[in-house]
Image (cartoon, rainbow, N blue to C red):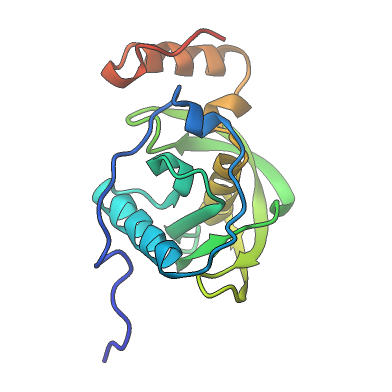
Length: 184
């Protein structure tokens, strides 16, 4: 029997900001108010993530420059990891570095091989201000690093170099949402 609502079930689906939007390229501010507005934001993040079939979503991706992200992501063993982190500290990463396909709801339809560590630990708070610790391996470790990057104003394409970066930005500029993206 369920005693908790499904995350996002009372949330509002919001528009996702795309590559080139200034809110995606600036570090987010720490959350200081752990009241009902934060709880609504987390619900909206879940609703928006599910509506767009993502596995994680950071607040700045819906135009809110606060240090909050949600996730519903499997690891490489298909174990589901569901939750949120407020004011995460930078992830502690270790293990091997793997280049794997990475996409982003802010770069819809585009993937690129991106290097990430195979293990990540993120510590922060929940919506009630209580400590949380999230640990991930494989695909989930990649997602944790990706969402923490968003909160620092880093989009995965910023981590690319050479032809991967050039190809990704060229592809983005050819999309209806990416016409204003500069070179580089």
